[in-house]
Image (tube, rainbow, N blue to C red; front, side, top):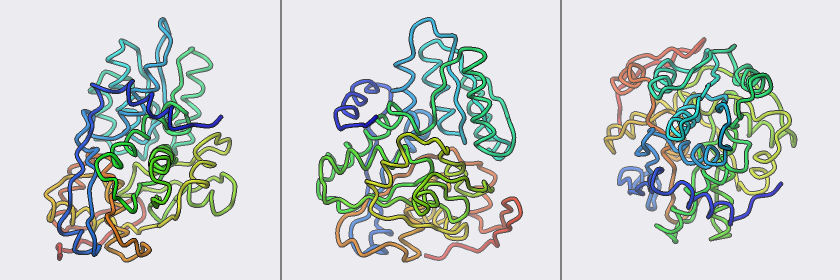
Amino acid sequence: MTLQLADILAARRTIAGVAMRTPLVPSPHMSAVCGSEFLLKLETTQPIGAFKLRGALNAVSAVREGAPGVTCCSTGNHGRGIAYAARAKGLKAVICMSALVPQAKVDGIRALGAEVRIVGRSQDDAHAESVRLAQDEGLVEIPPFDDPLVIAGQGTIGLELLEDRPDLEAILVPLSGGGLAAGVALAAKAVKPSLRVIGISMDRGAAMFESVRADTPVEVTETASLADSLGGGIGLENQLTFSMCRALLDDYVLVSEDEIYDAMQTLYYEDRMVAEGASVVGIAAMKAGKLPMIGGPVATILTGRNVDMLTFTDIVAGRDVTLGDVELKGRSYAA
């Protein structure tokens, strides 16, 4: 199966009026760091606080009438999107999550009326339960990334970016299972083939990066991270996002937990914005000097704001943060 620009254009029509066309705003501080205009795509302003609403709406819209409900596995925001879309359509939703998912994200999904099942300590464990529910109870499974309707929904971000700023030279995309990166790259490069799309992950458990490096989908050890939304594997039987990311992404960059910590502080103090660790990996990569010379306007996608606020408060206050077996030493923000 292959996706085309027409699929993304169709997705835009499907999700219009529910998913927002989100703002693209400049960051003066990061523009100074970058040496050229640095822009923030605010998916944090979506009704569920994350870009995942786009793909979820597109996929749930295709569920047949009379279906008993939907299910998915999620590190948080996909589950919130599915819960939101299912409630709007009057469908039961069962969201499967691992014990590594922050409680704030679990609570947010339950608040939308979905059932949450905590299974194991990895995205793979949660996925196995989602598959079982589809097989045994007839629920329609909606994958978090490796699904054509989900990818097409996320790709609408790429359309908006190039419509708002045709002069963009690069897009920095948070990279996990690849649904966002694949969709954005497909849309953006269809409009402007010379555009660079760079996938950015945390440096522990970067599933797509490790898979592309191995030239085949591989398993990774899932660990606690400030960028928890980027956790999990891509699936050993991956059908779409692996090949699309391998073909469409121009580069891959990994950032450390300390660099993510600093980027969360930077976004808060310089742009007065609250965002998840996964949202700021583009800022982290730019501040750490890990990106190639681009020489023109750059945009990054702030993918979500559904952060654990106790952890976020510790970060902006410069306090220590514990992530599993890793302790990040706090430090006051310095521009």
